Length: 116
Image (cartoon, rainbow, N blue to C red; front, side, top):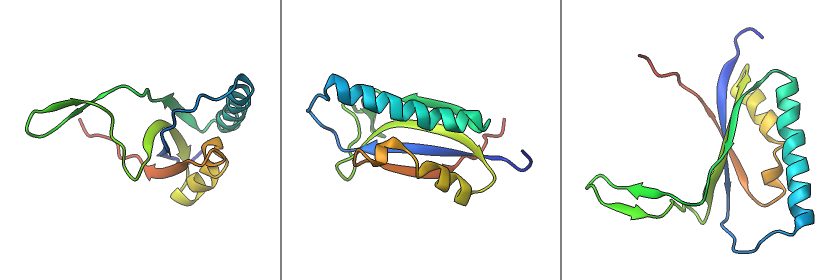
């Protein structure tokens, strides 16, 4: 896997107060497991995590608000870091993401390592 770079998938979706049924949850878990598993089997998975719905926003004036950011009526719900040779290839990988079938979106961004 020469010239592999890291790319982050940012998963966003509209917040909902509707609770999914047990069958819907089982289906979602299966689809996410298959999506993540297929990337892991290619040795391209670096990490993945879900993001909770509780949080604080801290503003430059020091004010803290017990809330999460909602932008364009979407919230950030998780992320995944993958290895890929290019943005184009990483984007192709992201097209199989189950969040798309739920009406959400995936943003694919390159990861820039921090210099120490």
